[in-house]
Image (tube, rainbow, N blue to C red; front, side, top):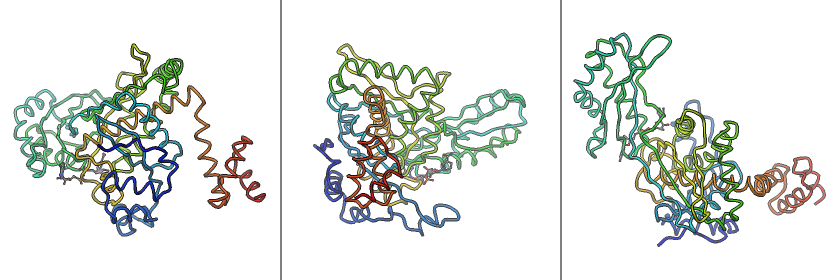
Length: 418
Ligand code: NAD
């Protein structure tokens, strides 16, 4: 069985790390070459096809989080992020979680929601007409994706709701679509546009917006882990973590920062695997308020033995096909590193990373504070920005930390003294 608890991964050279990942995920020599490539894997020609007015590409660090055990399976997790400490925090959280069995996770099937805004109708009559024709509506929608139909997925349900607006009551028709292993934005939009002429015909109304909802409440992932109390730092630390959670869950100023930390982990994996990170962020932020007030995306408590229990629940609209996943060579390799076979499996991983991240962040906040770990990498960046060569960096970093003066000016002064 594969083991992602790789001792001292952070101390290894790039070559050694690549070899470990290659063996873990059966990467080819060609894939390793791509990972070693300095340009981040995407040519200008490709970039020019992905966005408008392209003038270049912009790469970010890609690192590996270790120690993850999710539903009994070990993973090494690629994370793309510019912020120091995030990958270390995820690995640390996963290391503690695996003592008592790692993460137990469940993800919904991938149902997306499309919306059609229908105007100039008698809403109650229109709702009846739509209900009567729901089979035909689904048939038109499903004619737009042979792939989904072939695998038993596609549009499954039509429903109606009335919303109150200052311009009066408005009819919104919603299409529920099983988008399989894709994020499904395009197929959802296509289906919404395809059914709207028929909806206009049967209701006599005028459809205005026909678009996916990013509030993907039918794609919820739930992860749970038990963190052994001594590995957490003892019962006092467990209690303090629960108090820190209560602060976040009851004060929006704290909660936004607390959830931002969770998204540090989740978005890093989203970036690495070519997901639409904005869609994930937008849905998570809306979900944080689903109980009527903005709160924590995680819940923390303790069991009868004093161990810390962490839970996370959030919508995750992700895919392993479509979008840039099959276009960006790095996204392809990162998906292979994960060894995943479904969008749900990816959602399970991302939820676990979010929970691990949150554990490490609040553990650090309730003990030594967040800056200790953070500042070392920050100091490295500062030393680098001051012009230090790789062999000079550690000396300058140590000195700045010792003096508690981490600044560009001090780094430049120290560099001159070397
Ligand atoms: P896509 O358009 O590439 O569609 C996925 C493709 O994969 C389809 O052609 C489908 O037939 C095929 N496929 C093959 N095997 C499949 C399987 N097992 N399950 C499902 N599909 C399978 O990608 P998409 O997921 O529809 O759209 C994602 C992209 O849309 C992202 O780049 C996103 O940024 C963008 N987008 C987002 C929004 C939004 O979030 N509001 C709106 C528009 C576009």
